[in-house]
Length: 261
Image 1 (cartoon, rainbow, N blue to C red):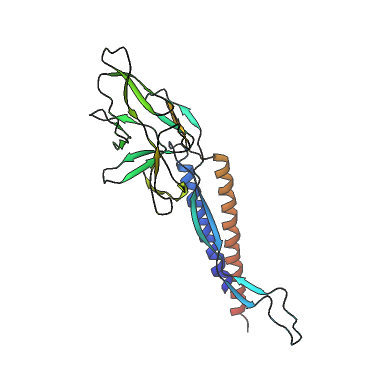
Image 2: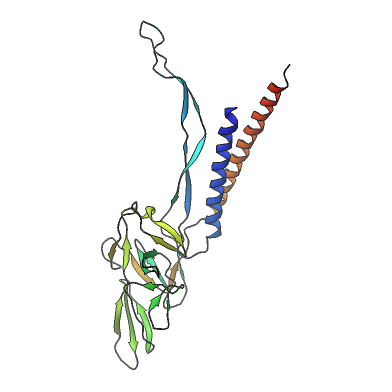
């Protein structure tokens, strides 16, 4: 019976929906995480009577046809790249982005990664790195003698070196923008890489046209809303339950037919 497979596709779709929601909830306290949303499409239809088909030699037509759908499929798990709230940390190397852009990261395999996670540290050579030790571009080195490190709204990193009375410019953090930032590929560790869908990175400095500013001593939280996720979870559970009832109903109908004499 066709209804069995149609309802089964609905159950599979809602299972995928719950997987996406659970991942959002699991990452709701992750710095710079961007929530995902499962989106669905209906499957191909079987046409038993096409709308507009002729019903007589006089030219009369069927106003409404007969089409039976085959169920649903997962079309995409779109990532919502909206701004998350920022939280003070009082740590001088923590940086949040207010507005557009992602930090540019050099990865060990030679690829370039991009992230909204600005929880940075210094490695044993003084380089500004992520918590995994990946270098933040364009390769800023903060010497051991540096004190009172400051990062301006336009990403300029300065510090007083040794007994100097004036601050020394140590470099300027870069940000990257994409034509289609939702097309970026997530690779874990709070990192994205560009794809053919995202387009190439457009690198610039914070505060310039089209780029957000940097905020020292703050981190951007995940843009996950717990209330919204729980509401979506309940709706997905109800949809799954209704599809399972259709499976049970179709099974009872088939059982009734098989017992007919």
